[in-house]
Image (cartoon, rainbow, N blue to C red; front, side):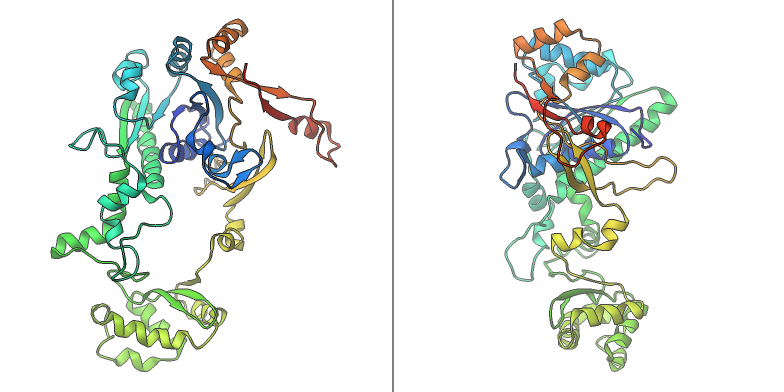
Length: 427
């Protein structure tokens, strides 16, 4: 696999969202990520509500592409033996089990660093491994609530609202990947591994830089402002004649450019709107003045003229519109990847670009136990040992079915071989 992390081996003991985001980032940049799923039914995202792609849950497919998948029962002697063997040659282990679970299984950091001193061990949790809430379990909803985010999200005077995406989960995954890479750089210089950890709570807090700055400076907690900005105006959504647009006329230059675009130069001399502080102090009046003008013409008209004048702006898309935008395609943020059981499937691309060592999305999410036999064989276990593990219930292996007919139109023998389907065989 290409990518700047080519050669890094990662043991992924995570599930659902935050941990898989972390290991997804590493996999997309070239790391060999071995996703370890539990018996009997694997990652919880496999059972999330529809939609599904074939027999696979769409959520699982999105979060686990580019990874190799194995299935272990860590409550069995065989499962523990396999994991311990894999960890001895790993660079990184990532886990997001509940507090104390890894220690009870015998796989806490202090246990594993004795066998692999260079191991980078990363833990993600709801509130972190220290402090009065260290034993609490956490979810994105709880993190958004307790970080303050829900108090200033939504429309003024409305009920507390969370951000639509699982903000703290995804941010925690990105922070964990960043921490792992920093620890990896340290290990390259010293040979020393270490324990890296972060939490959903901290991940949510770092999304409040602006609001925290305001609260610390004024002693007043910011409130919900809809799409408006707490420090600059106009910087929000406006309704045009046929849809919504966003306008970033935040600094003085862009404010004057906005006035030029909408044909309202007289507002530049209005004492309510002369400076940024004036505009923030009279935000309702500013919104009313601009909203009346934007409602008079279609969104396409405003976007064209605002762009010509140099004002940052854009349409308010739904998800399908965003995925089909030409910029999404140009930046390769929507890509097609081959899944072993389903053929070509679409997924999001790699958001970080490298000039010399580009990452890529090369493999769909693994079916249940797809790579168990391959990974165990590479780890030094014999066929007899693998069969013994299967008999014990310590592992699950998926069998390759090479008898499936290729899709119509496939003539190239190599392509036909690539299109062979994997089907789970639970022996």
